[in-house]
Image 1 (tube, rainbow, N blue to C red):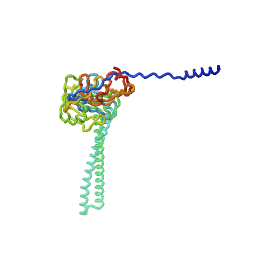
Image 2: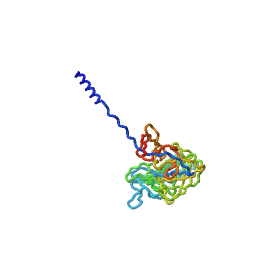
Image 3: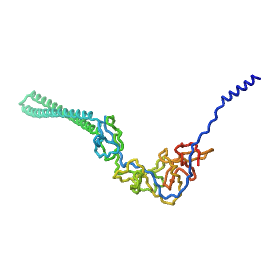
Image 4: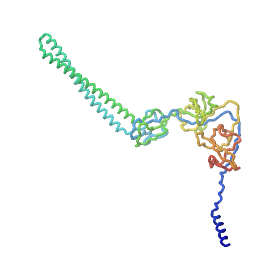
Length: 394
């Protein structure tokens, strides 16, 4: 009996040691949400546009080497982003000693070839003179031989001298021609060397603002490496995308006004200069470019602007969401919301990209991405991840 009790106690102890602690329930992130409502559209749609330079060029080195100097905008300060540069300014220069040496060597070779050509031409002139004399002597000898005043041996001697003179003249002419080719080749080497020497300078091809300068003095660059990026911003482009329902009503030459928060209370007129013939495969939007005069250069590449386009037709009601529901997108659509999907128990937050319309009081119209009646997160979205279960609180 005692052994039986001991065995039962041992089994009870073993059972307690093998019991796993109960898993604690996961704490859900608390969020507040609001239902998507509808409001009457005003007939105007505002599109977000990017400001880009009218002309942008990357100025690349034509020859390689170590960067020896950069253009000095002011005493002690080298060229920097934002500086205005005039066309023809030497922006940077690679070390020129090697290219200068090649030019000097090529010029020395040219001078040597030119001197040899002078000597060869002098020898050719002498050979031509000797040939002319030999031809005169041979004609005289032939005439005397015919009158039986000269022996056959003397005639043969005159013929031999003529043949030798002709050979000498031909050789001298060949030498002149060969040296002339040397002179031309040496001249080409000089020209190539001078071009390479000139190409050691990085020269601005346009008037413009420096957008980027990735090089420093002492850096080793290869030919083709971009040293400075310049942009002509005397006029800029406002680039934005529109859906197919809008692009059909746009025409080249139409004028619109752009605005930017960076320069409030200012309208900038622009004219459509390009409409993409095909929609972007990802966004399904057609890219439109407005050319905007910018003589005072207040509009800068990279700024965000807005373009308002009047949409004719009946004023349909559109979904609107609170401004607090809008957050940055993880894609190129730029904006998104967290929509709540009902699960048992609770909700799951799903990030959706949206296309925004006009502001309606403290809300904003959503042209694509949500439907009326859906719940969107208005508070707590910064702590929520896509696909995460959340707890809805009042």
